[in-house]
Image (cartoon, rainbow, N blue to C red):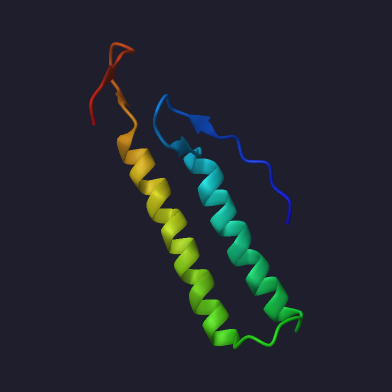
Length: 83
C-alpha cells in the first residue's frame, strides 16, 4: 500500500500527522486485513484478524470522537465559544 501523508514540523518539536489521515490509515489497514482473510490470502486465524481489525476501528473512532470534542462550538452570534 502506498500512501502520501502530509507531515507538519514544529520548530524544535515533533512531526505531526493530521488526525483524519491517521484514522483513515487505521481503517484502511483493518479493511485490508479483513479482505485478505476473506479472500483466503493469509494463514492468520480469521477470529484473531477480526478482533484486531475491530480494535483498530475502535481506536480510529476514539481519535475521531476526541477531535470532534476538541472543536469549538458555534455560538448564536456566529462566533465560537469553548466546548
